[in-house]
Image (cartoon, rainbow, N blue to C red):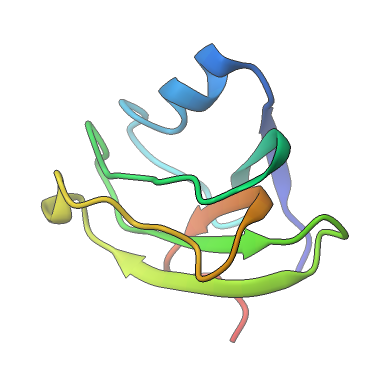
Amino acid sequence: MGYRVKIADSLAERAQGLSGTAVLAPDEGMLFIFERAGMYGFWMKDMNYPIDIIWLNDELQPVGATKNISPDTFPAVFYPPVPVRYVLEISSTKSPQ
């Protein structure tokens, strides 16, 4: 399945993320791009639906996933298993196994 993703590559876009959006279509997501690999934390502030976070290395290969994260988990912060440069957020009902 292909995804239509919004790119979040500025500090402001990464800070906003998907917060405050009402819905996320099954084929939509957001790709966060950082200048260098790091242990970037993500939380569910102002989220209205569950998501999966796919952690990606410099070559855009998955190195881990945090699945079915509920908005009720806020203020918990989720981190990748290793430093990552890219992070993909998608609907929790549609992520690949």
